[in-house]
Amino acid sequence: MVSASDVKTLRERSGAGMMDCKKALQEANGDMEKASELLREKGLAAAVKKAGRIAAEGVVGSYIHMGGKIGVLVEVNCETDFVAKTDAFQAFVKDVAMHIAAANPMYVSEDEIDPAVLEKEKEILTAQALNEGKPANVVDKMVEGRIKKFKKEICLLDQPFVKDPDKTVQQLVNDQVATIGEKISIRRFTRYEMGEGLEKRQDDFQKEVMEQAGL
Image 1 (tube, rainbow, N blue to C red):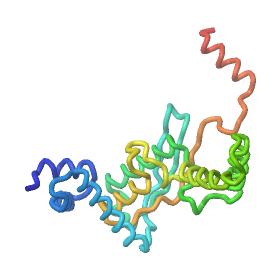
Image 2: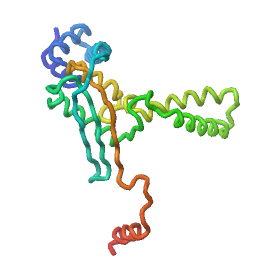
Image 3: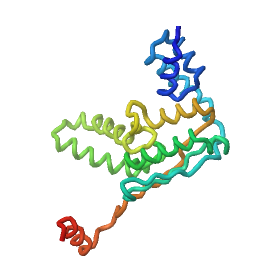
Image 4: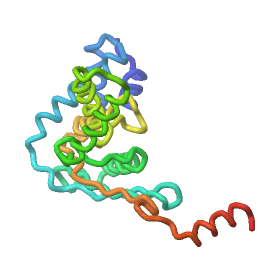
């Protein structure tokens, strides 16, 4: 027998509908973890089914962090304007923008990575492996593994979600697809960090030191 409190707990944890949570708990014989996993699997299946649909609506969300030191703009698409205006979708977009501010990804997904970036990273990793004294015959395998790790680190969808590191951003998207019932895609983003790429003028640096010293 599945209790109402267990259904409520699973719903709060997964964001899925009440009936879906009840069915998952029944299928899992009341096991909360197994029920959560079942909902995730169903969410992934739903996401695959919806992948071919057109998602041309959505919003451009923003997030400003650290007193204006970091700012993010992100475009997240869905299928209908109705869903785009819901609190759930708006909150999801806000979470994605906040994650980008914190995790600083370079690309949305692996297929966007500039081949030149990968080639440069491969050169650096190869040199590191050789400098570590690794035999030449194992360097290639080491570099291959490190490149895979590097790609996951710089791609938004592969990163662990900052508010729940047990799931990736892609899994977060899949969960939203299962909950909302529409195709959702993170199309693009821009992250700004105050002073990034600029050298501060000497007089600005001196001013900061004086202010910190209380002069």
